[in-house]
View 1: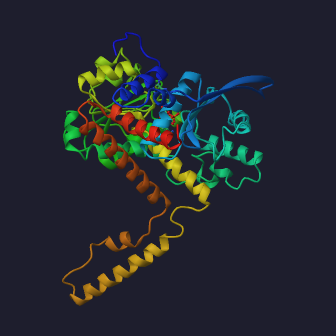
View 2: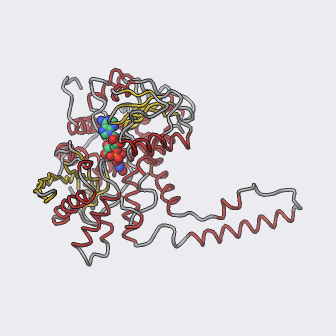
View 3: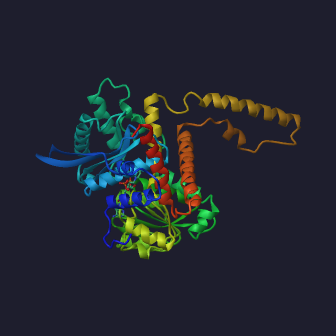
Length: 476
Ligand code: NAD
């Protein structure tokens, strides 16, 4: 792309889509049908707070209904606008297709600074917004199922689910109207950590392929790799925490709203997270160098860069200075299409957003299925599985006795083998399988087609092919 102007988020998604469809043989009409956003609903509503009426603006975009319900998070942020919500909804379509979650793409947003309001005020605003969407079936278990995104979490999802239940008192499936709910309100174990966990599983899968590691100019495993993460919110915190505590990565930089922390020996992610919760930012955190210019830390030397805050942070302006050889887009759209061109030309390997942060929608899918089946995963099988394992252990013990102590089981084998999987383990297993399978489907295209040079184009090709075949099956 030669345009000197920085493309907007939505233009970036369209440019990346166009780059992929240029390599496909789709009928032109179908190509356009897939690209365009089907509908965006804008609502302005008033809520009486602090003695006066405040008017809020919210959006819910439906990008593609090739499968229903459509799915996508609701974001609370002051910068929310229609183009952003539509870009995010498009990404949801491609993301769901890539990880084989049976949904169309949607996204929502409310233009608000959630930190400017007390909890009870935020509840009133959220319920009112939910009411407007529910009235139009834009929150509905069979039609449109939101989830958390920036500025929202379990608490907001619980309010929305409760609002839906109040307005649909006889709907037995009402809990499936949103995902990301707390465990005691129909949620599923492992949803809060899911997107960050998915980033970890994506990197683990990447590091299983020496060819792919070499393409990024890296070698070895995740152990000891220097990681810089931007945004220590839900996604960034869990990704950084798991990579550090379970894979031995060294988190050398953390970028937040009020600047960045840097420590070449590695930062204690848990401690930084607690510091932010207590002090509202990273400033004055001990054992690190603080830099007021957070964005500059994106350009520091590291092995893996994880933008996990917001879109457009790597642009045509700073892309030439980015040194990381491997970038995993935990946030949606952190690299503009212009920056993507610059980075690809430099040989930077980018694990694209539609794959990298798909852990959230994957576990949301499990939650939705759980809500519709009205039973927790593992409830029927767990003890039966344990009983069957017990039989094998008893046989092994008999063998042990027969051999007179010449052979014995490893010390913790029995305890580990006898324990049947609980919901969290099943969720993690399903997520791991999803992330591995989706990576392999992208990788096959990346390595298998000489005209595909990067993982993002490969991801689009896989997704668009699947969406197109859905439309074809519908006779379109
Ligand atoms: P969040 O609100 O929990 O966290 C965002 C973090 O980024 C916060 O800690 C915030 O302080 C920080 N931040 C905001 N502006 C910043 C800036 N200019 N510089 C540095 N840090 C900044 O949000 P989240 O749910 O973690 O979402 C982050 C990204 O991941 C978004 O792009 C979102 O669309 C995407 N995502 C989230 C999920 C999910 O399950 N929550 C799923 C898929 C994708």
